[in-house]
Image 1 (tube, each protein chain N blue to C red):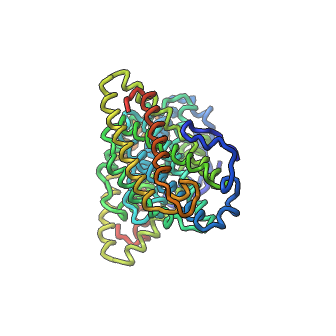
Image 2 (tube, each protein chain N blue to C red):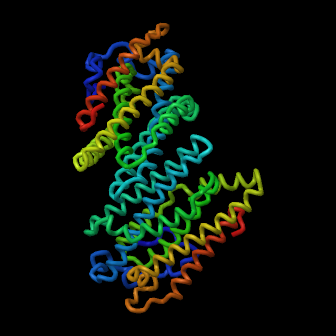
Image 3 (cartoon, chains in turn yellow, red):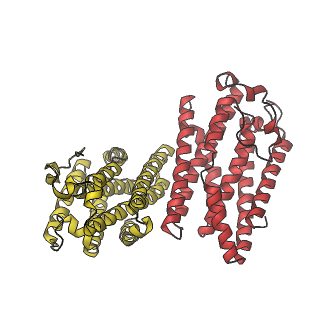
Length: 248
Length: 248
């Protein structure tokens, strides 16, 4: 399978797949360490979608109009359907979804607890920023996955409509009242900081996942490479915020 | 279209349709009062689904396990898809969904505000009771609708899985700790009381809808007939609560 979209910040994604990336799940999963890494990845992704569902549904309450409320509810529902796909895949490969998700509950819940939006615009910026950086992260990882898992991961990263809806509403709000931009820029920085700190916690705790991230070398955990990935993600975030009219 | 299910408490539903109930939307909607009543009904149903989505998503937070959380999220998502169907139908007949929903926002919001569950079991009982009485109400009304609208209303009342999931969990909890039954019985009574009081408020405020409920007589609003409908709904509720092991 070819990549449908190639993010700017994942240069290796355009190279011809080799190693695991050229294998299917049946072949690749013979390696127990690879298998464990994929189970971790799908568990993290599944709980991320379920948590996103909950937060978007919660943010729908802050919507200024019924049409906006329906739009957020639609996004939440889309996240839930992504969750279902990953959960079904976990079951298919013989893993209990709950068991796979458990190790990541604390990190996601801490992130959402530390970043509860106080109004509608903060909720929109959070949906946009959170979705974009999660998407960047999983696309980086997808480049290292077997063809079957890669197909699933890219499918659930398909745009749920967050981006264009949020960008349009936030831009309009800043145009109407430029001071709003300063507050939202601060908010976006806080979101990014919290996301990085929770991600680093997960990477430090989950050996199999971290090893896969740095290229599948079983006994060499190259923290520098993970650091470079975080830099690429941060850089992409900064560009997006600038495009939104927010100094990141 | 024939009824797929006939509730015990709607004896007229088994009779051969006559009048509006034998017409399609194009024919029936020529009468402006009938048209207004259907717009009200769809508006109320649409906002009810959207509000149910929000409450179920909120209750998912109280879930004791990740599997339970996913189950509630699934129900919430099903309600959202029902909302979409009704909203699309409103648009199709040339009515702004927001405009149609607005008159019912206060009643639903008051209901949910007055009945915020304090734990997982209260949330389940609320989902079950709320879904059942809404379903009873709309099935009573469906008997008086044109064939097209009736088809849509019955389709969105299709079981979203609330009933069996909630009944199973609540029964198990009462078996494990019988005292829980007393508390939940009180809770169910409070839910029913609040639902009735909000419904009566809506019936009193919306003339076109009320007139349709009592048989389509344009200038005779028979409060007694609406009262009898409420009695039938209350009776069905009492039976369901007894089956659940709760004295209603």
